[in-house]
Image 1 (cartoon, helix red, strand yellow):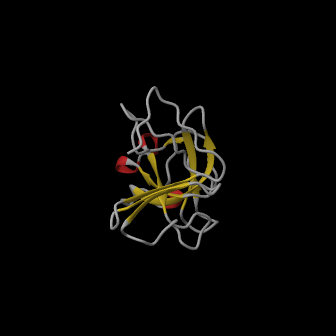
Image 2 (cartoon, one colour):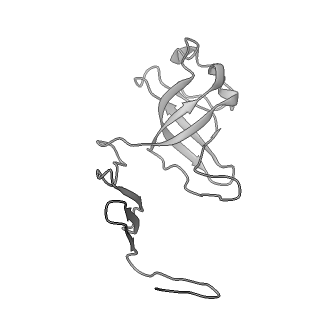
Length: 147
């Protein structure tokens, strides 16, 4: 069952029995609207594709982080009282056997890794910061100090 409306009910997916948080997979992404459609977990015969949902991000105030969810990325759909008109997609659920596994297994590392091979890694155990770009690092500033 695929539904195109922005507001739907999910009787087919059994949403009404307390299912206000569901695991799903991003199926579509709309950059201008900052919205995604999510296939809510279930077998292929009774799963449901949501309407366009906003997604939660790291920060959306004084600091704004643009890291849109990828098609195929697992996420949670949070719907107060099961109402998809109020639902939000919460991306970034690692699936080790899936398309986007965790980029590290070291609990002492904080790592931002991109598909193209670039990364920023902070190692808490050594105090080291590693920055890697496969082609160019460009710094633009009125003043740069390296100590």
